[in-house]
Length: 293
Image (cartoon, rainbow, N blue to C red; front, side, top):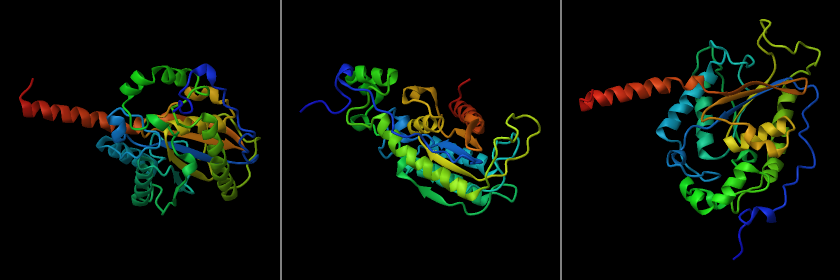
């Protein structure tokens, strides 16, 4: 048997072609898109490559999902997130269980929040165009084993991600080809729900800005697909893949101002601070039980 795609010498592979068309952002779109990465999974605890494999949230991951859900249920509690008033149009999520569970936690927290929070019954919608990047033969394998068996390919993937990929896995151009129409549909839905914006509105923040009055949605997904999502929104080449990072249960906010995307927040994790207090308390309790000083 020959080597599967992406597993041969780097010099034998051709660069990925960029998609034929860029993302068509509605020219007058005023809207906000919130990206939320899923919580920690059991595969992450075990240090296994995930890709599209199903792996449930760990106990820590469920707690992370609870905390990001509570933050988004009351987005204007101090310090306020740069989000519009009212509930989002929808919570869209990858169909993988770790993303679906995080999205459900956000929906449930919003529905249980008091009047000052989001409230309402927010539609929850799965979209397989936002699946994590397929990692082929690496899925479920320990990171240490991949380093040992496929070290050269792994190093090439980290160095030049459009020229190397997991054996049998997805190329970045293939990922962008499915993400792009998913984003186009999501933005078209936001445009249909709002009013046209104007680029002549103030563009500099900090002047006691009012809360935006436009529609917004939440997308719950994965670090890899969010890298491609942001590159697609900002019309950047896939070679820049490693310039973005999303921590577990982190929040990022992209606002569209008359069709112009603006990063309002990137990789926020302050809502996870209680985990540090809980960990410290657990360690203190364990010392007390053991009699250690």
